[in-house]
Length: 521
Image (cartoon, rainbow, N blue to C red; front, side, top):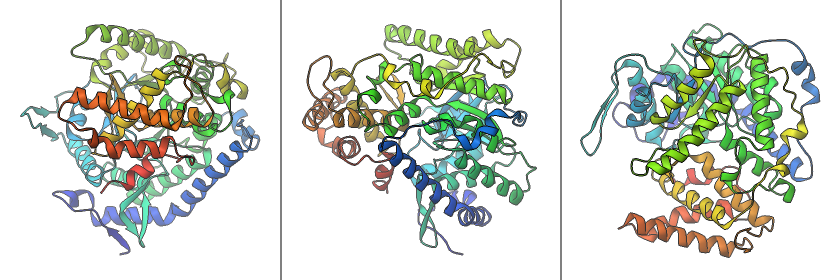
């Protein structure tokens, strides 16, 4: 066999890496790797066209798809009522907390909330298998024991890595295999009853077509009826916002709807137009709410598109982490969560995301108030919505300023997140928010954009320079180490160096997880 597994084989790993599962993975790689590479090259071509002065628009060649009448498949079992979805990585403790949360769906994440350490990749699959069997349990270092509650549990929807990320511990003919196919294949092979997925980072309907072909081959090989596999696509890249109809069309017999991936969408907005001057500059991250014009247009179009096609529209993340020590912080933040979820439910979303179990009751209460006994509101067509390309591109109409406070927050969050990511934790509570790779991408891309577009900070009048970013990095690390006590400044050297590599270098790295992954064992 031409497959080589270079990662260590720990206890029980052979339950996941069976000969049949690895053979299946090899077939997927040989069948689809050339197309994956072609589509990644196409991303580069489109980005070069944008940098050269081009723009985004709805595609002329797919006008018939947008204007014709068709619908996706009816929702699969367990995916009819999705009013509250909780997200999180697949380590044992987080898996148990998510499954005990009372949410309708758990997004079991091997993407932005997960560091793709070899151990996380395989042990996450083991945890999901044990969860399905009802045997998953965990005891913390402090002796606290976690077990699954009796009663109904959320439907598990698994999120593999994006098309761009490799897996260096599994080689075919000495070539790294796609992390997306590793995650997908192992989960589909071992969870054939409900093989449901979230698909991240898609930039075109052609990438959705590739996934659909992967699904068809998988169903044929694993003996599943056609349409057993279901996928919800995150609309979290700027190009994908102009191809929502087409993405649903490509996946229609396997579709489970679309999700408004707000944080990665904001990152993509910066990334795609980062060299295009002041009309494309965003203010501080916290000023870019879901009600600013371009974000409002994006979510309105998503609901309209999904419901016209009979698909679920799932809202964005409530990333707040309740504080056990500061009721005042909780009160302010929870009001923002309520307002956000109320807007989504009233706009027609069928459900929404939360990052913490304590937010599940709030989200459920709000959607209960709109849905009542109905499982969803897919029949609410929003025919009055008519979004233009100009509305989706109205970045310059975003209110707010670029401030030193915003710059400090970006630098601090970016370095703290990378510090944890490099140590194996991909979902991190920072300043009462659950930060993941998407929010770290916003942090570093805003620093890059402000630095390379000559921004002067509104609150201090200081120009953004490499020297200022380095000074702020040192000052913020000092604050962190003083607060933590016993942690030396030098412990953050690797995270600081990586942040500077992706935030201030002239060349903009497509995804910070690419150089970060090469630093992992």
